[in-house]
Length: 246
Image 1: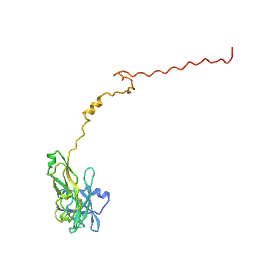
Image 2: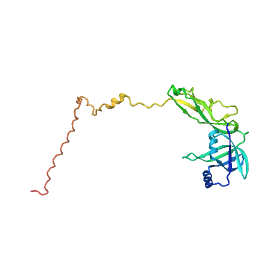
Image 3: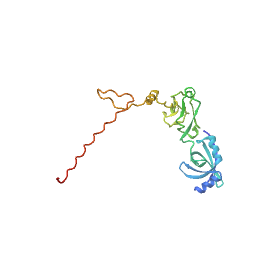
Image 4: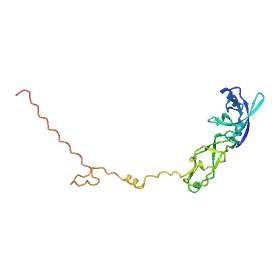
């Protein structure tokens, strides 16, 4: 586990306006809490914080030197949460958690895949990483930087599970062992077009007509259906009788 040092300044002014001023000055507002103490507002140098994250990662142990009224004290902390700008991904705020080096912690450790699977190079499969973090419990000094998983021997249809990981003594894995970390799956094949037989059947003209009655000769191909007979005209109306006799 990497261990880095950072300097912090006690923040006397809080709120959105004070936080904006701190960011303009190249600082990142932060809150320090934990171990039953009252939360403290501090500021971290943005460049130093970014460099520490790049070097040691999210789970780094940080020796935080806090300056206040000319004095300084050092606390061992870890980063609990980072808030970033959604567009520029700039760090806006950090939550720091006070820890004890003699008490176990529950943390998420990143998973990194190594190698190219046999099922990809020879079988045309696709490598899928299902889990990117593993939950563990251990002392702060035992937290792994990452879990590196070799996937070279994976064939199509094969997978690596959490239970396959080899961890150091003193590290308890909390993620269920049956959870899949990575797998090589067969490539998705698009469905082919309709069979040729169905296409030919669809191309044939459909014959519409009635079936011949019993004893009736079938109609010749291409013959037109006979027109329906016209209804007989109604009988002429009788002449009206005269009301007067001649």
